[in-house]
Image (tube, rainbow, N blue to C red; front, side, top):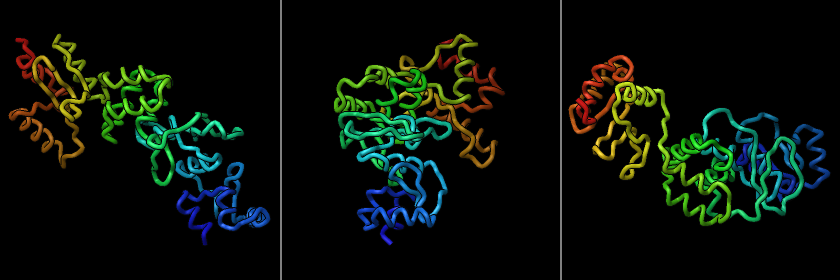
Length: 282
């Protein structure tokens, strides 16, 4: 059945407009609602067959409420894995021609949304990574925005020139300068990184730049003046901790400098004894 197939592609949601396109008039729609075959979730939007909810279904229902709508801002950042934490409420961007408010949905209106600023995730229209970062910039603290930029690189390989192209497509949009600063900011993400920097400070050793783009790669710690790069390596990709520690020790004996949680928190004296000569301190 056309209705069921369409809803299956849309996380179980369908709009009144799509029902009409499938040949279902208002009378039959009301009858199906009375029979429990359709369940109203928003004005002009229905769940087909059941009311089982998911984040994707809620976001899909939100964009079906307004013609031309896309998921945006924090909701888009959640789908794109730019921000961590629980799924935020539906948040959409719509053309200024769209009308009405929608209960439970945060709506942003724009004159136009460039086609290159839109993508699809699981069939859901969503602002792409650069546009989402630009939308978020006025609303995030600088550190959180810098972390979102880092996640954009990790998950989507988004580089500064992608951001600049989006800014050029959206002149005058607030937050552009703040976003440019965030792109160049150093980010400290993990407890291991925080502990490593604290160890350096405690021993009066020079601090590195952290989580920066270096020759096309993201690196944990880099001292440009010394030409030194250090990796802070996670245990989770090794079968045993012994194998993990052995592998990292092997890296240090080669051209790669790497340290682990054990090096930073359990063997700090030995780690400093190794690091101090590398960083130009006796």
